[in-house]
View 1 (cartoon, rainbow, N blue to C red):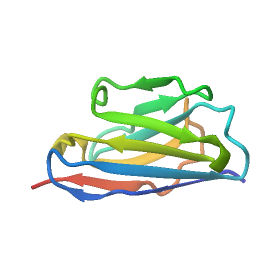
View 2: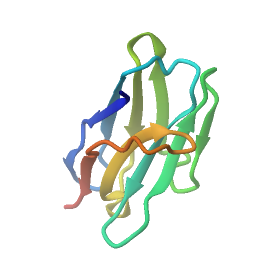
View 3: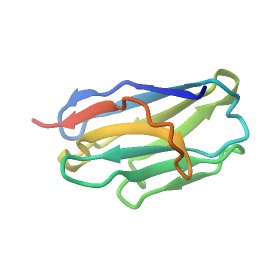
Length: 114
């Protein structure tokens, strides 16, 4: 059974940084495209970034230049380094396949506030 466990969220001031981690279990993900998604209060979930098995990356316009997605296939891990955070980045962040499948985890809360 596929499990995706996100961690690394927290409260950070505008301009700060956070590194999110996603541990995938239940199968090997090395050949899959994985993504980070977020859902802000009152808004639909949206994709933030995705990474192909070969390391190619895709970013939402809101994430370009500030966020970096990476993966560690040997450990079934996916990361999201977030820099220059803004209050509008406040959301619950999830990892999943890209396109997403019905394997949503609990997510990790990111709050950007002074």
